[in-house]
Length: 507
Ligand code: ATP
Ligand code: MG
Image (cartoon, rainbow, N blue to C red; front, side, top):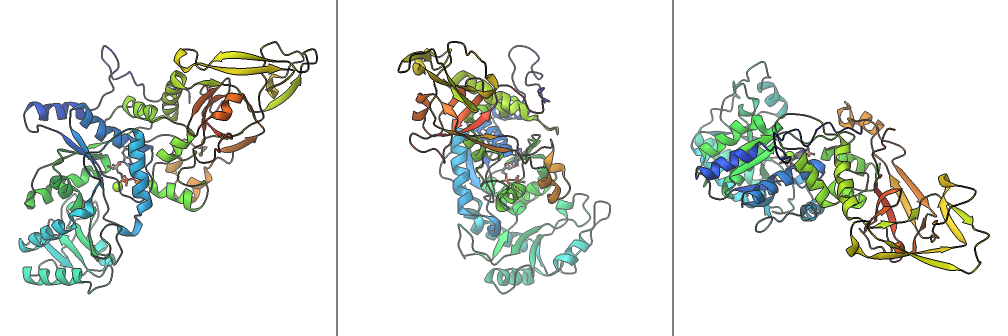
């Protein structure tokens, strides 16, 4: 576990390590050839959960490349599925992107802003004989779709006239039919080896309230009929997504080629970030929250950005981690130790030092005068003089770590105040690949029952009483800690352990 699976320097042929990002030369070439004068990228989350570490990778790729090449990035909510979406997620996502240190260009955008345009374009495709209303039930449609080894069959409704299709589609929109009764499909090729081209659904009926458009619509466009056109409307130059969308690219291009879109974005795919011991599926993270295996989306054991934030991870260390693992098209699993390495590096350089004994033992120095207190001055950080000094009282009664019990404590032990609660977080999953579990029951079986340990009665040096929420420290010999953003009260910080001083997992 101590050895990272990915060596951050292995990509560098000479000189300082430059993490490889295969998109960099593509963008450079597009700028050199004059194909684009400014690059525009976008980060397109669906607001159906909180952002996790995988999203951080996508954010760093999209915002990072735009920054590097003097371009801009849009934040666009990909909100085509009102049933699962919520304002709470929108707020959390915006706040997480800002916390990571990125700024989107202009207002926040929503794919739902383009629903009128998309609807007009759907009608154009119908008029061009390239889309039709299909009455097959979902079960029949599945049967007609064929399989990876067998071509699909044309639906008996495929050859409806343009007039009929316009009429059915208008009635779908008017709310005449229940959910699932009919769909609008693109007329492409039921025999295509690419299943995504077998007359994909463009619109489905869903009588649902939408967080942005209210009750205006009872038909909603599918992701594939939305994403590329939204990119085109916004003038996105490089539409960067993860590899599972590779087989959607021909469809992305088909819609752009068959519609009078104002621009021609191109889709590029990179491999998802997979981290061992970590869940990066919103659905499963939501299950952990809903079933109360954790205390909310921002529980410090969660792999969400808000969880990492409460745990004390810094935005810089997450950005650095995302850069150092590179951006490529080959699947792999990154060792969690790499992320921790990045956190330690940042905290070692920047976190003030403090004393806090987690498992204290009171020691009375009987030959030390009863009422005497000596104040020792210690630097807050060994390398950063500018952080100043802190005062540590030394007196007759001191606290030492139970593990350090000695009959005769050497001079230099400090008196520590009884303030503080610490919790210690460990990894939420025992198994390195918790997501691989076939069914959800066994992914939950992987939960580490000791992932949360609360220690009370810890003894901390007086200066820690002033710690503000999110102040980070190295507790000498114990690890890096952060004052909890939620549970700390004035004068009574509650500390979370961010990471141990050294990689000790599994030892
Ligand atoms: P989930 O499968 O957890 O619901 P998602 O990919 O559907 O995730 P979106 O909100 O659609 O979630 O994701 C927004 C962007 O983040 C997408 O472009 C997606 O490709 C990217 N993304 C999601 N997970 C990862 C990951 N593990 N690594 C890199 N990028 C990711
Ligand atoms: Mg998605």
